[in-house]
Length: 259
Image 1 (cartoon, rainbow, N blue to C red):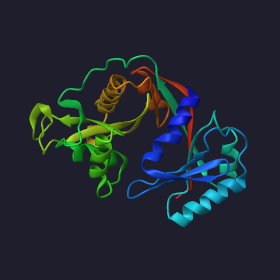
Image 2: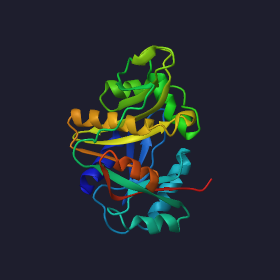
Image 3: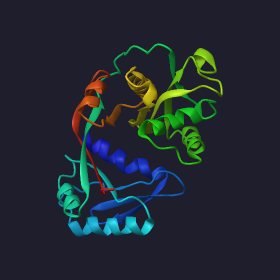
Image 4: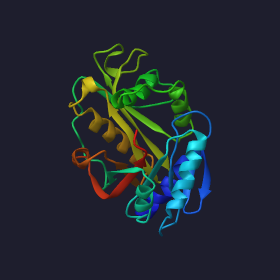
């Protein structure tokens, strides 16, 4: 299972980034505009990683003007953490969770409509903006258009919970519809990861994020995904995802420079 996830992690950035190889590490460099990528272990590398290799990647990231960031799975690359920490980066741990069986049913919160969006959906821009609002910063210009292009190409699936009380009524389909929570899954073959699920601050504690996640995993299964996984921000969030049938199988690590 973890080898399949590793292969996925190596494949998914390649749709919008080029890969630069640094021995035991691969740096993904975004082609065009959008959120910058990160470095991770080269596919198949399971041994030690020299601090010098980490520092070479960090120097290249500084040269490119992108964040000095690394992402990997602790259990499949146990030699990386010591090197990353020795280089001065801070490492954060997140539960890596896999869906067992089909998604468990969760009650859909009242007053909202949860659905998966097509590329031409009038609620797309609001749905794309909701997770950015949840995490406290605005989307970059053009993010909605890039998301629409990825939906058309089959690289992204987007689900959102729309406020039934806003313009557009219960179908959430009018241009004035307000997305309160949204997230995506990114299919590659028969594997997909649920990412970027966020709920605007004013709508939290209503179960919207869980309902959006349920819609995403149902869509992933319907489209042939045999392995559906995600990374939870912490143990409390992991327990919520457990209500959908996810279980923790490993630890996802993210290393970044302190601000």
